[in-house]
Length: 279
Image (cartoon, rainbow, N blue to C red; front, side):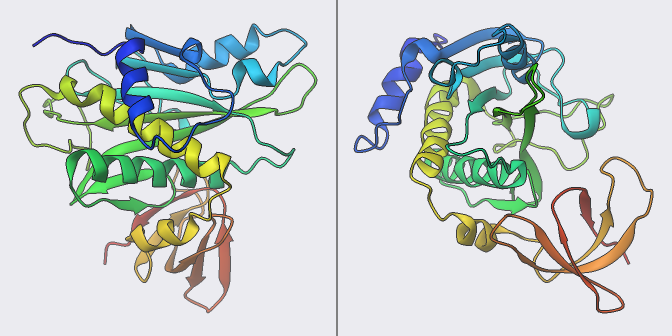
C-alpha cells in the first residue's frame, strides 16, 4: 500500500477529528514529518536553541515533529527508546504554558491521558496508565512519554518538549532488552496505515486538554493500575539507590503519586520511578 504519512494527510485527519474544537496558534506550517530522524525531542530542542535571545511563543507553541523511525530515540534517565521503522509513530510537541507555572509531571499526565484516549479511539482497545508516563494494553507497555523542559539563555524555562512513542505492532528481537514493551497488535501487516490518524488523534486530544484547562486527573486516576498495589520506589530513576517499598494510595491533583511507607508515613512523589513490588 502507498505510505501517506505526511503533513497534508495528517492535517486532513486532524481537521476531521473533534471538528468543534480548533486549537489556538496551530497550523500546518507547524507540522514537520520525517521518514527518519535521530530523535524528535532532540530536533525540537535544536530548533529552540536556534531561536536566539527572543523566544517567540506563537512561533514555537504547539510545534510538532513526527517520524516513522528514530536512530537515537531517548527515554527517561538516558535510556534508549527502541524506534524502528514499520513499527509505530514517534513524535514530539512543544507546550508553552499560559502562566509561568510549569509542572512537567502534570503535563506528562495530560499527555498520557491524551495518548490513552487516542489509542482507545483508533483501535477500540482498553488502556491502562502506569505512573507517570507509560501506557499499557493488557500486560504490554505500548507507549512511553518523555517531557523535557527547555532552559533558555536567560536561565528561564519558557516551555517543555513532550516526546511520545507508540508501538502499533512490534516484533521483539533477541538482542533487544525491551522488558514489558510490546505493540498494540501482536502482529499487523500494515501498521503504517494507522500512523496519520493516530498522530492526529493524540495531538488534538493533548491540545484539547491543555487549551481547555480540562480537569483530566480523575480520568488519569481511573486508568492507573498502581493504586492499591505495593511498589518499589526508586527516588532516583534509573538507580537502586535509596529504594524502599510502599503502597500506592492515590494520584494527587498535581499528578504526584501518593504512597504510604511501611511505618505509616505518607509521601507525595513528583519524580522517581516505581515498579510493582515483587514478594
